Amino acid sequence: MKTKECFDLKENRIPEILIALLINLIIFSANNKLMMYTKHLSLFVVVLCLGLFISKKEYLIKINRYKVIYFAFVMTIMVSCVWVSSVSAILDYSLYFISGICIIFSDFSKSFYHYLLKIFKVIFGIFIFSMFLEALVPNVFHIIFGFASFGDVEMRALTSGGAIAGLAFEKAYAAFICNVGLGIIFAEFVANKSYKYIIESIVVMLALMMTGKRTLFIIPIAVLLIYVILFSKNNKFIKLAGVGLGVTGFVIIAYTVIPGASLIIDRIINNEGDVLSGRENFWNYAMEMFHQNPLVGKGFMSFNDYVFNQGFRYYGERWNYQAHNVYIQLLGETGIIGCALIVILIVLIAIKAISIAKKESNFWNVLLVYWIVLFGIYSLTGNTLYYPCQLIILVLEILLISNIKKIKDVSYKVGKSIKWKL
Image 1 (tube, rainbow, N blue to C red):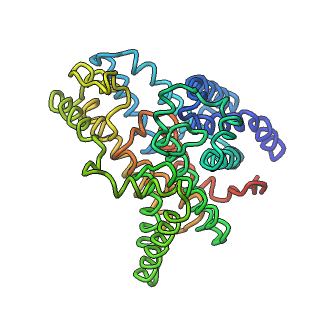
Image 2: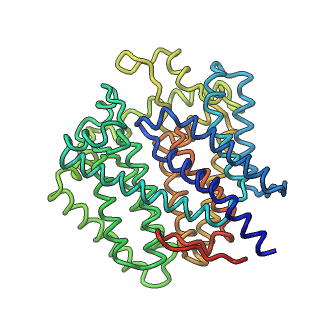
Image 3: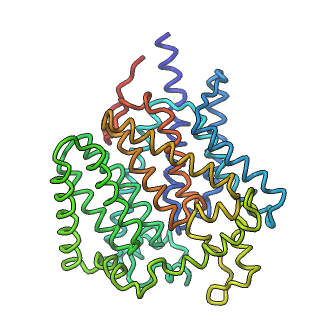
């Protein structure tokens, strides 16, 4: 029996490593040339997941409330094809949701989760290096990494104003990826209490500051405060004060010593009275859509068409960048039903993640808390659900929380072997 199980593990290892690689490539498919192949990557994920399912010859699908809600949401947006103005937009984007369904319903071995993190850490290291290289020696950066850039005028505009984005080639994408990596580093620190993770987090926080993205800069600070409030058993006030002083000191030093890191502070201070950066205009359009059809909305992915038909132009051009608030946009596009499903899903994951992390603050439990806070908060000002490289984090949250008992003893350290229980 043990021989057969070992054979199955080896047989499935290559497809699982490929899936782990593809998922990571999707995470890093920001405003670079990988974006052109995101659909292909997602299609390969679907094919490999189906292949794994068939090869195991045990056609058993495990269902829980997180998977059911996600599946129900996908079905909701597919049904909206009936009344949406642009059916092609839904069908075009549906592949990402379908690949998500295949991922969360797949029964991966423990090695999959190990390689998922291992591959991420390697690519993330290159990504952070690219950000500092762009900040310090921009000409060298473009020589080394220019092959990944679209090289167009729009890309230059997206990283204008002194913002640094590295291989993401767009500041919001870069800041989100920094947060995904910070979640892993923070979870490693909680699990190991090693100072090397503090140094790593400082380096990534500096890179995050260079993007100038305010909400995404606040999120790691918010997670740290949440951790102290919810998980500290003694001296909470002293620890909160320590965190506050530490963050303040770090920001002051970064602002005065590192020119690129001062961008985030400048944006916070010099907002010229427009804290939301004009987002409220898009939110008003989304609410108009909601009032016209409050139950089921105007149809998923219909926001851009709606604002165009209402006469909105961005410097004379069509607006293609969504409402910058997932919840409000979902109200307009999918009504109360679709928005409620996503809100309930995020809340349930957050409650479960915090609950299990309070019982045992191991790596995976803490990572779950960070990533769901990241996705939930950034959805207030970003387009997480509408970008495949950010949607995949919600999919991974569902996958991880559905298999939290299985992955408890999976090594998260690069170079460490997996403890198998056969």
